[in-house]
Length: 367
Ligand SMILES: *Cc1c(COP(=O)(O)O)cnc(C)c1O
Ligand code: SF4
Image (cartoon, rainbow, N blue to C red; front, side, top):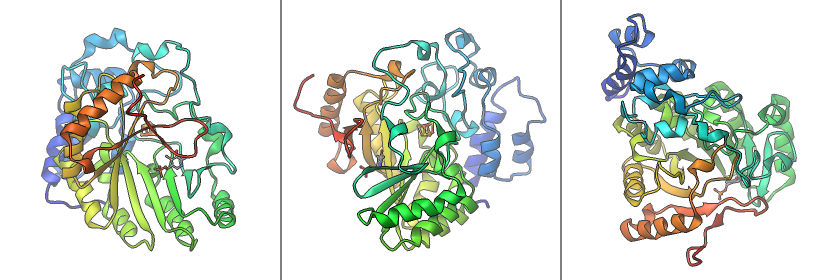
């Protein structure tokens, strides 16, 4: 199902600018066909048409000369939706959105302290797909799939195959929650839970809403940022109709990820009574300056989203080149406190393996 928004035209411009952006593109490109018939592109089509080929990405961005700095990963490969690529600047190898998805050779460095399961999550599953680490909340990894592969992702080495709940596990998860009355909130996570079809996602919502103890359902997702059409009217209506509070935590690292088209979809979600929050990962070379953080908070707010968490990078293998010292992170945070209203300052946190909450970073200890 497709949204018919007034800014549909913008979207066409946005997407066709990717499709036709490169002189190498041939004329039977399916986006061009769609563009001439002036049909919006469904999110499913966009997910099926993500870029996984490095040469194709470099051609679109006119960056073929940086190929020698890249490599082809064995497992977690390049994956980026065209609509996200359209938000990147051509010819800029340091574009903050590009750096989030480009497999750099720097990932191959083995650096001590950076491991495949930094949060020891592989050991905390009482039932496949269920993480009960925090007192009142459980996290369910409903899918391993993402529309985009973020190079710093702390779950990039996670054994999803062994940990995805099968449909029969839905009942086991319901039973587990029933036996733990302290659980009030369920987080749907992944992977990206919105990469499930509406039909499958609604099965989860139905099952959770059937548990009287659950007051809040939270969806942790990056899809509304990378393919805004995922917030289709069928999904938004279903969420609006829920008897639970619905919280959607999106994941944005840079203001350039939220253009007007993306903001319009987010604002629609907010109009349906969904609480919208954002989490950001602090990434060297991408968002490690106060001006970038201030722009991000302001852009989020304009799109109806409040900043929630600013995470120190999880020390996952292959992501060390995105890390920065804790001292630098704290300095940056003090600058943010000076420049932003309190409600636009996210909480600076880190996830430590055996703590049952996200740990606030100590702002008074100079590391
Ligand atoms: C982040 C997280 C939560 C939610 O934490 P909040 O502080 O409520 O946002 C719950 N469970 C797990 C395993 C988490 O990693
Ligand atoms: S969208 Fe989230 S889960 Fe998926 S690769 Fe990016 S950080 Fe990881």
